[in-house]
Length: 311
Ligand code: SF4
Image (tube, rainbow, N blue to C red; front, side, top):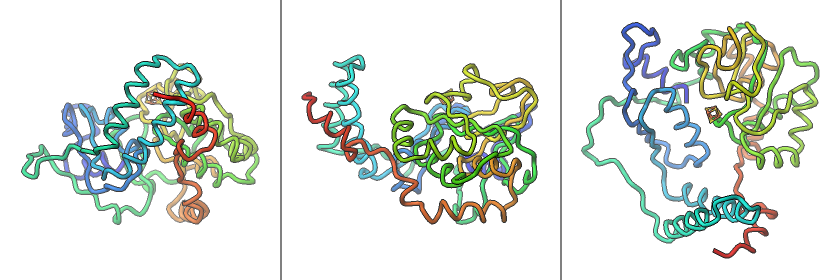
């Protein structure tokens, strides 16, 4: 995700300096193509920071199958919401009907073959051999991790709408068996459903055992008003934005992945590429089990409830 501003900077289409700032994304629609089999949760992650680019909107071109998979799950979730008294019932019912209609005849918008673009940024993912971070305190200030390796980290926040359940499992795997980590670690899954599933799978116990403060599911520190990191501290955060003072007064906030944030929480500093790769092996090895998304139609307790809801 942070490769987008980094490659825009390299192409001379984005500058970090406020004076005479150049931002090719500003007010435009950012269209991402080339990864059609991403899960919707992964595509969401790519598009979520479009607001930080000042883009008007963002689209990710996907094949119908991952979208259908997500929507089948979403119908079950919406039926559970109806069963649990969420409002507005009629709106939820209308949405379920629309989603079912789309599933019966899936049609997707596509860019015209001869569409003209303000700029095209090619990102060869095979070229990227290390994490990319956004540096304090500007989400446009993207750099390779090695350029800031060794920076002392005081606090780590794993949470916000940028994260999904896979990120918390990855962090849990990286922190398994760890005690007395050298940072204050804040963990807040974005939804109550994620929190329940992570508890069931034992990740809350692992993260709590490592010393993490398990916060209420939701925006948490990213909102900037529920809790704050210590004044003057330096943080690695998985949230979308690191504007000055958002996470705490006079703080320096790096933005990075949950995997990198977990490694930083073990070391108390940003790792070197070698350190990062040595740590991340445990996640790569268990990737199938870690990066599994919340398919509510395949989770018995949600599927059973949904069966009782007629629309
Ligand atoms: S405040 Fe909440 S919704 Fe907004 S960017 Fe942060 S986590 Fe996402």
